[in-house]
Image (tube, rainbow, N blue to C red; front, side, top):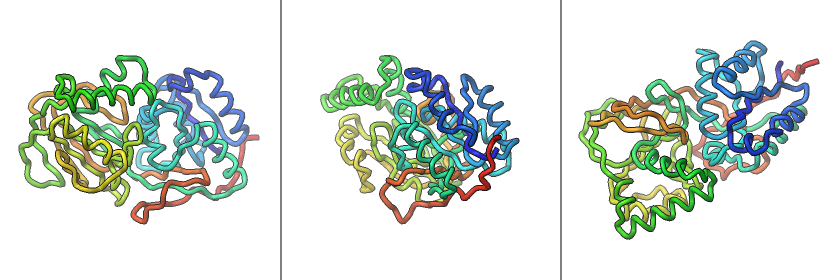
Length: 334
């Protein structure tokens, strides 16, 4: 086909609220690609097999962060050792942490419209080069253990999965932490584990939170991982061991993307990380919560080209890695 292939997850928040969104995406694509509306991983698998067969120029993913990482897992399976086409993330989820980290702040429709316009005029588009994390055989941009799944349980349980709902819950927990409340104390209950980084010695640690990330932002635009895109195959690790009140005081610095040392937090850059826990714990990958396990093997996965089609790019950082998508052969459906 060459063209743009779109995977549109029907279960994504904005797609559920606006069932005709898929039709708008298809209208914009026209004969210059295809839009596959998927309700399951099997649907995504079939669509991506077809995209590979016709040698699609670019794959756009319409959904949230969870949709993106699950779709990319399917693409890794289908493409095997072959290089994946450039990926365009269309923000139609709840938090959209990953596309925001790459400078995509417009809606999914506006982002696709910009990409289609530049594609049809054969104008190359800028790409951010970034690895995926490989976590126990899964692929994602971000891994969270401790506070992340503990926060998401009440967040999803309340039913208000909007940024406003997340901000309200975070504010409640921060106030509870500063007061020394029981809820925040349970959030920061320590985990006993052995940590082995980059093949070094296995060290016994007691921390309540571990994050590994190849993207800069968490939800609500907290720039917790400002160094995550500096080097190929190197992700940022954040381990937290301070009390809940200390974590609450660090929130402003974390929101701004500060790289300075903060009490109760340890930051490092790693190529591999292995965690062995005394007891199984749930964990998160890009906002999706997974069943408890007691052993994690985390490493750098393949490097992707993530398209940023807009004219307004993220603030330039000389340490980040960029490429380009295009020009193309411009062969369309007839």
